[in-house]
Length: 349
Image (cartoon, rainbow, N blue to C red; front, side):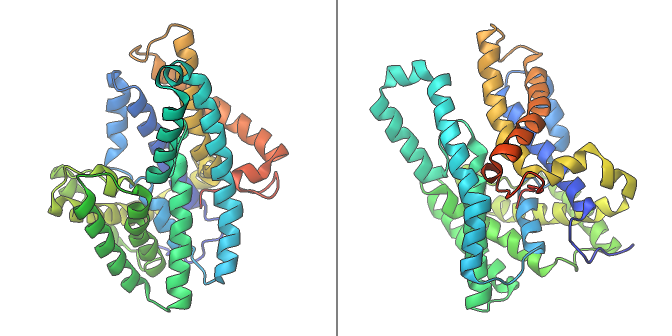
């Protein structure tokens, strides 16, 4: 099997990124429509087959290059912090419209304090929940660049130290509130460092087969894939469950990264899934925004969240409106998606 050694606009990785973006979309739709059984069952198909957001952190490590810290800060500002601020404001403004009755009943002061608390603890407020990823990823890029460039630490050392800190944060704070995104940075720094370390070494038939055996074995033990709420949402997990979840995610990443190399180039180069992967920033920022608004308009049309057709309508809205809104944003305000021009690919970093 040919080992991909160049990563400039790799169509295979774009295809895989598109698949994982679909997994994230189906996850959020299933969490929104918990009373509709078919969408929950459909998502279950994806649950153990793809490593979810952890793959994007691993991919970030695969593309890591040594840069001056001021360059890293500039990149984070334009590609991560500005889109975060734009969609944070849009999310809060949308929440004021959608939840106006709730806000009126609880009072503006309490609502503002609740949003401030959410922003501090989880890195998000308003209706566009997934934007916390941008804060976490920027924290990882800055931390990793400092450790690698200034302290000359090896990826293996960063992996080990990050895991120990993430584990301690999870163990100490798993039964109480704490700043979630700090734990998420240390947790996902493990995957970023691993991507830098094993960017080429992860490929091979033996690694692929061994990874598949590990994924199947751990899946049969009912250990869920690692969500990026590791340190905030695993309160019920045992110590061995927490540790083995890292193993499961890494094995899943190695397996899918190898598996995608067997897919014909014609498919990975031209498919709709690949286009989603290449424009993953747009899909990531917009899908939950559109999902929440679709639920609101369905409610105005007297269609309940328990209606069997409601998830399908939201999915149609997501897949129809995301490309349209993306074109408008890239044409008039490309910086809102971390791009510098309307022709720039805005893949998720």
